[in-house]
Image (cartoon, rainbow, N blue to C red; front, side, top):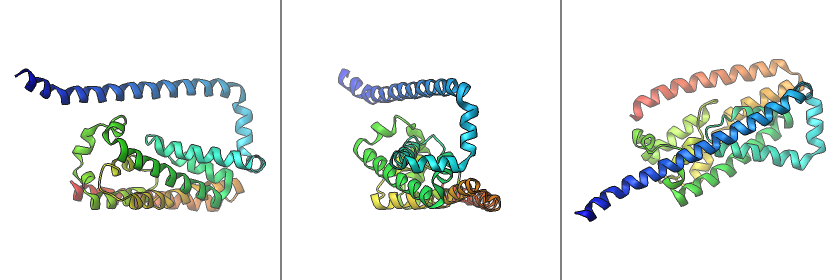
Length: 243
């Protein structure tokens, strides 16, 4: 009887351990963000006016990245990778920054390369550690609540639709993909090339602003809003089919 009780309690202990680790991780992340925010606020107090004036001058920004070619590109690549890995962070500001600093073609290329590298790392890390890794960021009830996450074909279709829509919280799907039978190539292709509409509209708009082409920037913004509206309608219909 004591053995049965101990065996029954083992899953509960594991669940409590995962929940505890998740809480500790969240506290550390929150504490780190607060610390970084405090440092940024202190720096902004003295340097913000000059920084904003510098950022407003696209020629100065692009001259700076040209002068520090390797470091600036590696830095932007690292920021892009970090944004994908930390799925709760929005990607649009990073995409806009890439287009503004490096122009449309190079900014787009940096975003796509970073997406491929980050998605690959997430996929294989999830394959290796499974829920021990994913459970630190997401509650398992989310995976159980949406049955389509367990269907490879449906997940591929949903991932493609979600990644094609700008401004959607898409990066969390890459973590769940590693828990399914989705192939590595499919995950990377969907997560990388599915971002193209979002990346292109962002980098075109930012690059156009940097070049003073306000008409093109406005067109990119309108295109982005159209894609968002069309994607939202598709997601609404898809939600009804996948329940």
